[in-house]
Image 1 (spheres, rainbow, N blue to C red):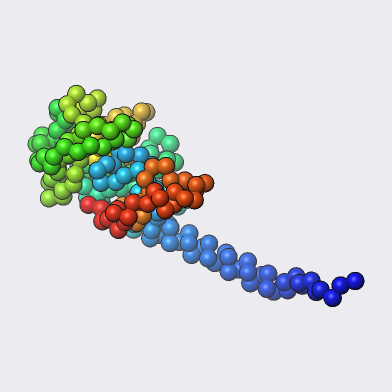
Image 2 (image 1 turned 120 degrees about the vertical axis):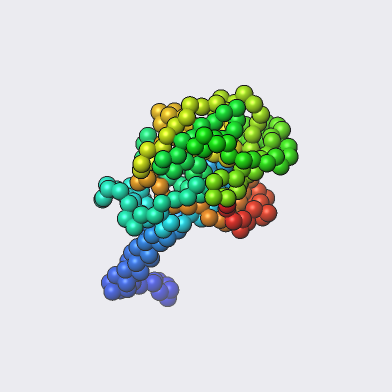
Length: 254
């Protein structure tokens, strides 16, 4: 026989209150994710030198209005966009891959409806005119290939004045020369900043991105909140600190 007392089970009303608190918290988190902000981890090197694999970015959901793809699992609740706002050339945007309407992609918006887009010998042409670019030097990067190599860096300036950096591994790339494409109403043309390592709108939707419907836009990437170098893993707690890249924390995206 023992004098120890056993904890009594929670009263029914306490259990109900606990469940209500959890449900309310989940609903608030869902509303924030759908309407305002969404975290996104960069899975590849296609946006180097502006976004690196392992960057943890914040995406704002209200810039372009909302579609069914703004909601987790993209339920077919409605067509088109609510409170739609047109994106601008140069925005870095998260969107659903058109061929499956499930996979999240992140690329830079290059062509808007009515634009004519073409690559000629590695140069970007919009509406028949070359997009100005200025050389920024040669750097050593993996570019997503795993092998460190030289990469030329350029600063492009889109019509309207938006500037951003691109990487180029040199002439002769598979996507350095393309047919001119006219962007139809309701669609957008995206490219990766790492021009020679990006499956984007230069490739048809069967093997790349193709043209992206307006309804597939999820939001605009705004800031690198945190960053870890490749090799960090939830299953390896020591990498949570050792693989941190503090120099990238708080980086505003242009």
